[in-house]
Length: 73
Ligand code: SF4
Image 1 (cartoon, rainbow, N blue to C red):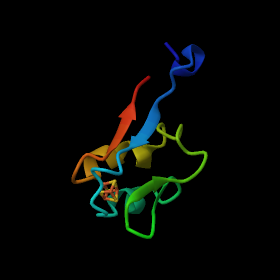
Image 2: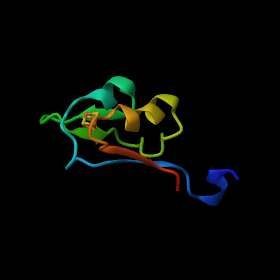
Image 3: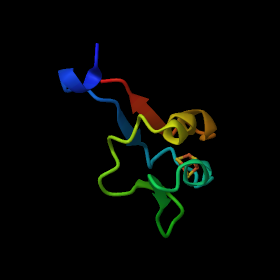
């Protein structure tokens, strides 16, 4: 089944309460993730649905505190 057809495309979510500012997400996918002035993760606008990107798929494993999750719909 194609997720796009069901309207349940994977989504990236970030938990800023967990984030410790390690920066692994930004290193892995700088086109999707950024860090604010406090070093906490933020998604760049319009990239919440970039979960299919191979670099983004690596981020949940790379983050040391599991602050980034990809939901499969
Ligand atoms: S890798 Fe995890 S802890 Fe580090 S900045 Fe990204 S979300 Fe935060």
